[in-house]
Image 1 (spheres, rainbow, N blue to C red):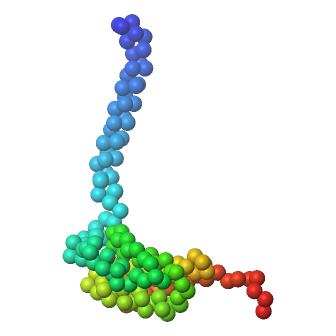
Image 2 (spheres, one colour; image 1 turned 90 degrees about the vertical axis):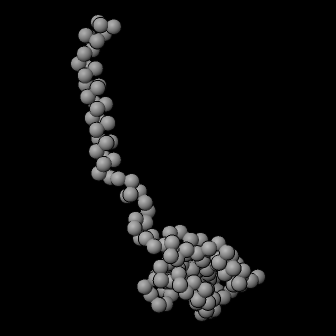
Image 3 (cartoon, rainbow, N blue to C red; image 1 turned 45 degrees about the vertical axis):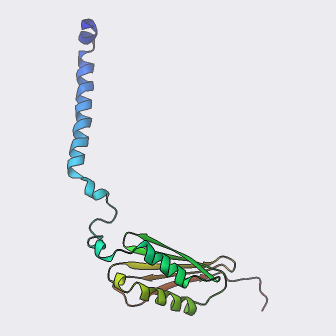
Length: 154
């Protein structure tokens, strides 16, 4: 064993130095980049407890606005509430706008804190509508896509 240590003394010292260097790197990195940076929303969710939305409330909204032509789910992710609609029949942008506004009435207090996104799709006719309402805005902003059939004769 003594012969091994004498023979590889320099290699052992370099190896121990590299281990200490790697350990020091991770310690300094942990000190500089603390765990609070791993939080997705940072401090933007401050006071969210004042605007909590119960599961019962979301289920009641779904029950009130669902029909055989309109099925949807609600997902809450941080400060954003997503309403995902699956349309069974063709609805116009104006009809959907009225439904979205009625839903927003149900979340009047929460509009001070949350952003609302509405995703409506009808895959049969390839119609998609996205509505977004920021907590600072009064109205919903829309983006609409409808596949145009280029095979129709004029």
